[in-house]
Image (cartoon, rainbow, N blue to C red; front, top):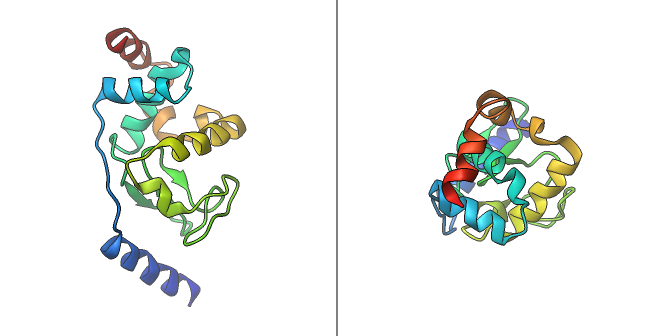
Length: 143
């Protein structure tokens, strides 16, 4: 029964979400992350992670098999890092705030995720970025 209610809430959320979203370019994202304090050494990895996880879209939602939802540019999981309708989770934020165009709070949260799990916490990074040339290329082209 709880899964049905959760599914209905998820569908209603998708239907009525009222957020402004943003699609980044590769270099635009690299420069934005740098301005938010991400170290340039890892910018290529962050951009590659975002490309492989959300396609550089701030409003991306992905439902997981465990019933949780990955949200936003960095695809931060709702099961641990945020809660819906009120601040909570390890990032002490509302999940809905991960879907707007302001990635300042997303950036703070993703740094916490990274401290705990590293880049390997994202399957898309492992699949598309680990031991690949793309992260180095991004850093060279954009700066």
